[in-house]
Length: 265
Image 1: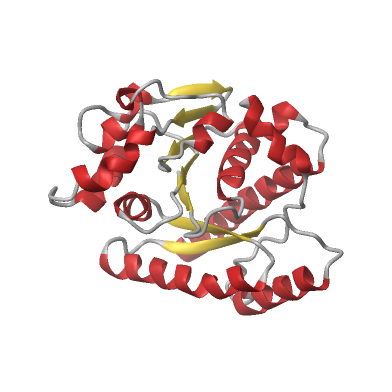
Image 2: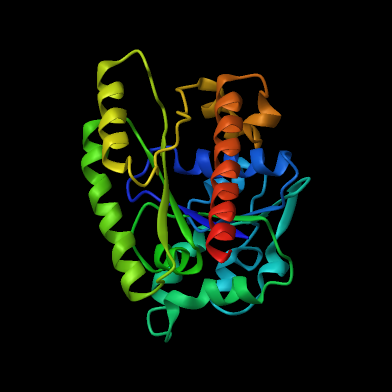
């Protein structure tokens, strides 16, 4: 199982759109996928047509120890499940403040989960707190969505430092394994320069995905209909881009398996 947190400490960068549509694309390819919504805004949940009626139906109850993941998980499409968020999740920081090992709660819940998936994605809130720390402690990988602009590019170093700190103190298997360029406009010189800078910075690790998510109004419209882009407009540029990105993610995973097999031999 690959477990991946999709994180950016700045909002409005395509984080939730990417989490939802990558999950849906992988599920459509026949892989079993679970999306955990850790953002109190619950946008990923709503995007897939799931709205927790109360905190008792959400991941909040899992974090405070009242329920298991299976009790709040919803199947929304073939091969795709969602553990929804609720606005009350914003209170988790306060409720978990005095709990020993509070950063490890989600990790332990995932280990104890009785359904196994090919992929688990976590949509992180755009802030570094107990929710994001739970996500980073529970997963093996991080993907960072990035706008092709200079200020987000400057903020990338802070995100990398955060991941390195969590790797050192809480989760030594954690690594940044993907940077995804969102809202890309290949016609602009700025976007081209930023992508080149990121590619140069990560060239040795090959972390930058080659697929760029183009600006597409259909991606912005899909959440209001409670659908992934593949149900809302499967022929749109947005659907095409996320299919290609999902294929890259699968290839990335297969490449690691091959490398692991070579080392084992």
